[in-house]
Length: 499
Image 1 (cartoon, rainbow, N blue to C red):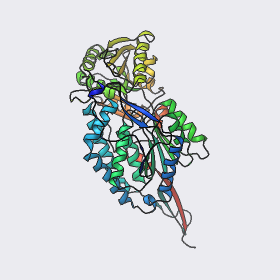
Image 2 (image 1 turned 30 degrees about the vertical axis):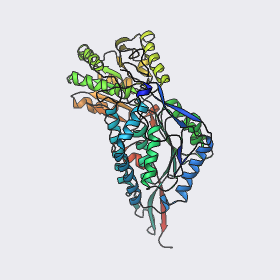
Image 3 (image 1 turned 135 degrees about the vertical axis):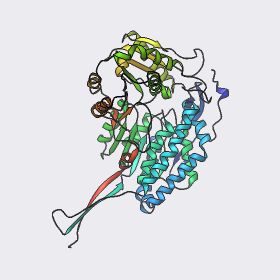
Image 4 (image 1 turned 45 degrees about the vertical axis):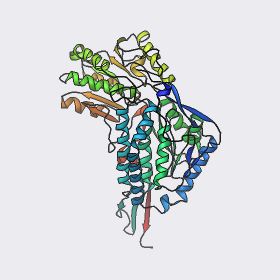
């Protein structure tokens, strides 16, 4: 496989400006940031670099749109519903361009990107259904017959989003769709490595004509821009997806400003998978490899710690190796490609360093992979890698790598032993168990402290089911009604009807 800069498709839009207050504007800094195609290691675009001044302009626009504009003061829930449906239709009509942009900016296989665009369409349609169903409660008089009590749910206000690089369009939909459905206004910062689908999405939002000025805004950049958004006193809620270290900094920052504001953070994970006796081992091996290697392992919920029962360990390991080696790496736009590159050189070097740590410091055995792929070719490719005989406290078994590396732990004898170890983990985002025993399922799902648990499968997520973590994997929920409700605040109204 060879991907060269000259073979890269041309972008179907101008990405040199950003979207603030219903208009495309130049960044006040006059600076730009290069965006790469990670499959080729080549620059494909230069996007504007927003400044603190631009962040202020975007937040002010969102604040004015919320408190003075028609989005909340005049639009009904049904009108907001129709606006979100218009976005879903626009994504559907322009999906081919979105797919190409996402694939060349992230290096994702085109088949994976198609599913993510499907998800984005579904998410806007799903949350559109909540927009006209914001409901409170009536509480009958409890202590005084002359009092009527009821609750009213209102949007929290201006929401500042800081997105991760790994699922640019999909995570945008996770965040923006429920926030807009609830009636909030938005300032959105994509990951600096992958801003292009956000830019094109903003163009589609603009073209729908369904949103008043200032309801949806975009700022571009790195740490300085994100910090300015988190620190802005007119932001009512911050939503963040990213690393544990940065997430903790975001939480501290939102508590240190003049006004404390709501925060939702979806952070890292080191998700375990458990293989019990009696399952279809070949099928399970394929599911485990998919759970780890999907998106080149750059998933917060990736299955990266594998427990295999002693009674099936020796039979299972060769099947696992074969499943990993069967993955097809190649040009992301080729239909047969199953795994793409890492996002940039920093992540590429990080993953290779962890593989070295696993082999040289943790004493793990290399079962397969372990090297840069297509040596001598451009881009940030690492082979699907499996380390076996990994100690339970090893760094590669406990630290998030964010790459295509699976650590197979030493075999276990008792499910209770696994649960006891995993309940002490610093993470709690996801887990999976492969078993035919209902009692195994009951014990595992009830006792594990994590937000999503898959049984005899992995990685399937749905718009109607919540996603989020425990402990260092964050708090708050994406997806489902729980996500929508997170962008609403409850007021209690007490009315003395005898007055």
